[in-house]
Amino acid sequence: QVQLVESGGAVVQPGGSLRLSCAASGFSFRTYTMTWYRQAPDQERELVATIAAVVPGQIRYANSVKGRFTISRDNARNTVYLQMTNLKPEDTGVYFCSVLIPPSRFFGQGTQVTVFS
Image (cartoon, rainbow, N blue to C red; front, side, top):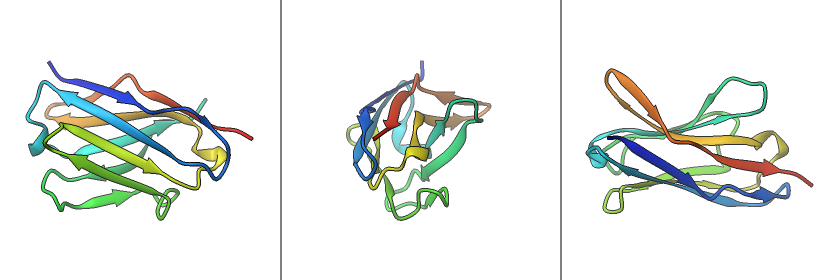
């Protein structure tokens, strides 16, 4: 079955950096677009970044993270990454990786990122 396991979340100070990882299994990773979402307390889940299957592939970012976050993937390791720099308090939330395998969208359990001074 599809499994997505995120890791790398932590408590950091504003201006800090983190790298999130998502290990995927149970599907042909290299053929699917991978996406990072986040959900802040009492807010809806929002798309953060997405990377297409083909490398170099189409990459999109939410306006709020452009220039600070970088999404990448390692098809040999079945892993997608999210490098986050210059973190702000508003980046706080649970970060999920996700894959759409029609008709279902799958999410991992999430990893908590807290930006706190």
